[in-house]
Image (cartoon, rainbow, N blue to C red; front, top):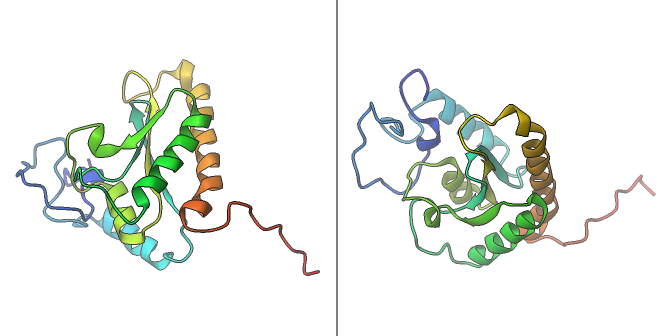
Length: 179
């Protein structure tokens, strides 16, 4: 929560939450999407980088999951994106060990205003949440190296697969030195 008591991961544009959430609730989303300077500033910056950003990863703890859109509906995304996220998820599972990839709404109860859903809807680029393995929101110090390596492998695999997800060639072009 920020200084205004807003859960910044619930302050993004999304489908409307059918339930009213009280300001004292842990997941209070704020008065409206992007009402907070933190989320508004990040959104504005991302929009200036629209043509450069290839994908998004949001890192959380502690479920051992790789989550993809959507959190605010059980409906398929459509347009081939469901299949693309499934392929991306399998690629990440193959390198991250005990992580399971699936849509967020099939992992938890419906959640509204999440960054992951906003990023995908706004930019149509892959947007994932890594829920780091653990037993609590604070990772045990003895597991930091292991968890860090899992995340590192996941980020590297994401970087390899994002081009294909976005419609590019699976084989990267070799850099040119001007020859």
